Image 1 (cartoon, rainbow, N blue to C red):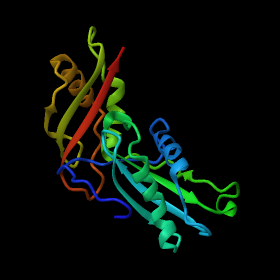
Image 2 (tube, rainbow, N blue to C red; image 1 turned 60 degrees about the vertical axis):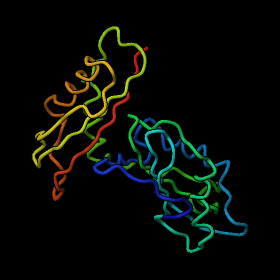
Image 3 (cartoon, helix red, strand yellow; image 1 turned 180 degrees about the vertical axis):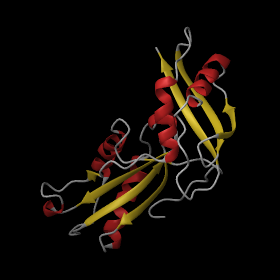
Image 4 (cartoon, rainbow, N blue to C red; image 1 turned 90 degrees about the vertical axis):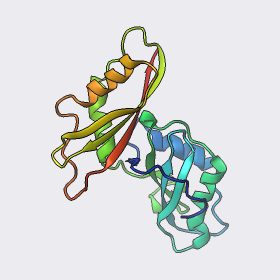
Amino acid sequence: MTGMAAATQVPGMPLIAGADGAGGYAADVLEKLLPVWQPPAGASGVVTISLRIGSDGRPLYCEAIRKSGNAALDESPCQSVVRAGSFGTPPYGAITEVFLTFATDRSAFGGPAQPQAAAPQQRSYAEEIMFRAKPYIQIPQGANGEYTVELTLRINATGGIEQMEVSKSSGRPDVDNAVLTGVIREGVIPPRPEGSQPTTMRLLFTLKNN
């Protein structure tokens, strides 16, 4: 852990990983960090951080995963995370991990010195499920506004659902059922990654209907 204290994690909560593959969220985070990033005077190098953001947009964890060799420079991006404070609700209202690269040298990226968003990363297993379910979730007529539904699932190795329940209701059974119906559609849940163990996952869906 660098630059901030780790937050308590909920057991079984999946981490939805991705750099900039969900509507440009990583770029939005980078835009908020750029004005408050203060690399040490005279420092030179490139630092890549892994930044985990909670469902409320607040940072949970920050760590330099590619270091420059200068400890002060390596710590500076996570210090900017502390200064920024909050980054807005992530896609799907789920815990999200972004990877951002900060460079002090013009030569680092072949252009002006500035932080860069890392290349898009492959969706995590939990993110893949939510991505596949989204087209099938139809908000019922008359359900205007914003709704949050949390599902708890246990999935076997072949992608079969061993257990599924609404662990946090939207307050409307028809909205809850719309999410359940979307998730159980054929092809939404792929087989688990090879070698992974069965685990209870919590998927948080945020639905908006104006």
